[in-house]
Length: 99
Image 1 (tube, rainbow, N blue to C red):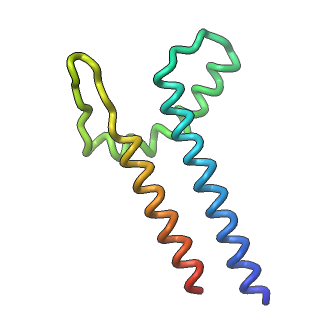
Image 2 (cartoon, rainbow, N blue to C red; image 1 turned 60 degrees about the horizontal axis):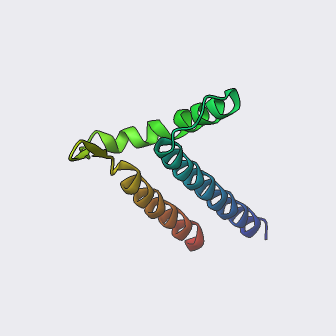
């Protein structure tokens, strides 16, 4: 049963990684909407979220233009990024289940 334990551990790791990254994307979106007062702790958190999430979002910003709605810019790349992340997560989970 060591193979079953390994697959179970891999599935748990992929699941945890998916949820942590999903939470980071959502926190990044919320932090970009709300102007936070300058605080070194908040600044470090925002910088961490930017460093972790922005490279992934830039992949989609190349192809998805920002919508301009009367001077208000709407970035749809996080929505597409979450959808792609969910699809990749389900494909990996299905592949691990097939083993």
